[in-house]
Image 1 (cartoon, helix red, strand yellow):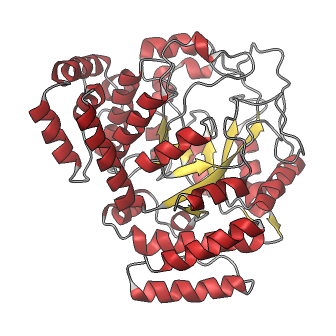
Image 2 (image 1 turned 60 degrees about the vertical axis):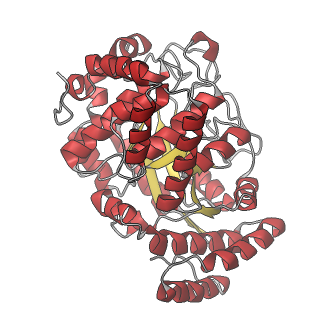
Length: 471
């Protein structure tokens, strides 16, 4: 039985409900009055149900798709303005006891060197990231209770937060580690993490069990119910995501939105972020082995529909995607991107990009400075802001700020101030020049005059060497 309020994965991600949804979507994909009414509902900025959104995904009418794209662009502007938050992944360990068939870290892969960072190595990685200008990290680790127990993760978080190098500081650590217990989530919360992120990989239970043949991750229900345990452990902000290409994308899309509906129904707050990775080539992994790969066009449509279906959520895209693809989906809904990423364990402190422990091929290999420059060239404000998390505006408090549109008086000035820090401390001359002009122009877009004035004063203080202002 489908029940979004249930705490059982088989009920809140219900296979029969998804099949019925896909059938309904196919039957109505050319039903213009229905499609128009769903688009009208989406314009209210309150989101769409998995069934409504699935009808739009099935629709192939070019004029309706153009309407969806235009609306996604507008909703993105309304909720997130022209800010793009920047982060970097930090891989702590690739030891893993799981048998996931699409990931090179799987236990049977004997030709990948296994590596786990010592605290001294974590420190070197963090200093290298701070020297680039990063303020926000997402830490990643394989699942291995012997090599990467929760104590190791907590020690790494503590080390990361403790390092102050020149003007550098990591102000927010998001955590992407395997499903765990309420008690361990509580420990992560106490360690001061930002968002807890866990990709579902696939919501199709039968496929999930085949793709995860061995290891603790084989338990579909334990994995799928992780976000409920995380929230029970006090973590306000959780991030969802599927790995597009493992299963049919329309099935995954419906499952993803059902998971968002479930979080809203049970906890009163939906996902803080939704990530949209696609299967990519990596050591021992051939993406062509998965015959559900999706085109760039379908990928863009998925991003636009996630934006209008869950309008308040942050959307994340990684350096798995090329510059061209990222450019397109930033416009349609993506609000966070990684920059200057290395997906290998210990990759940042090495001069040359190492490939032997990479989790996946990095398509966008530009430096952080190049990414910042590129975003500003397109009229976006690269934001290194971590203020909401540090001011306690998480979970429902962040959502109410976002839904009320007050975000412009908070996030906009915070973005400008953190960009100013980046320009003063890390940017190339060319990037600095374009950034200073952008800041002056964007100051005028802060709605409240008082906030604008305070922001202007803070910018001057940053120019004079003082750091870390926030609204």
